[in-house]
Amino acid sequence: MDAVAAKTASDPFAGFLGIRVDRVEEGFASCSVTIGNNMCNFLGVAHGGLIFSLADVAFSVASNRDHHPSYALDVSGSFLKSARVGDVMRAEARLVHATRRTGLYRMDVFSQDRLVATFNGTVFRKVTGPEP
Image (cartoon, rainbow, N blue to C red; front, side, top):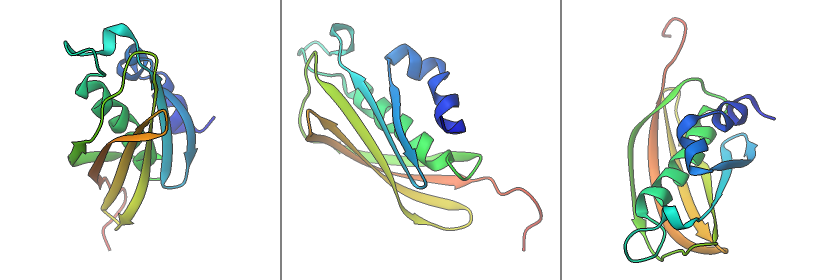
């Protein structure tokens, strides 16, 4: 297992939510979670905080895969559809653009292969060693 995926697998918050790291490649990560009753809001659909957290875990894994450490500067997004108990949600984070110090990622969240949310996030990469 990839070192970042292994660290994420032991992350207390991701573990609390039941988030699994499914795939990690350069500039990409995919994570999933099965929605339980305790993950829904008062309307009976997946809580927005769960959807965001799933996207954030995938974002963290993808951005730290080859650039340690990377810190989120901002994330913005839209919720498009809902998901229900028993659905398996999957978040995919992809690198869109990178510089030496920053990276822009797009995170798409799917439920049963339907797009339910999309986010964009920027990370700051802590550069080690002397500046050029």
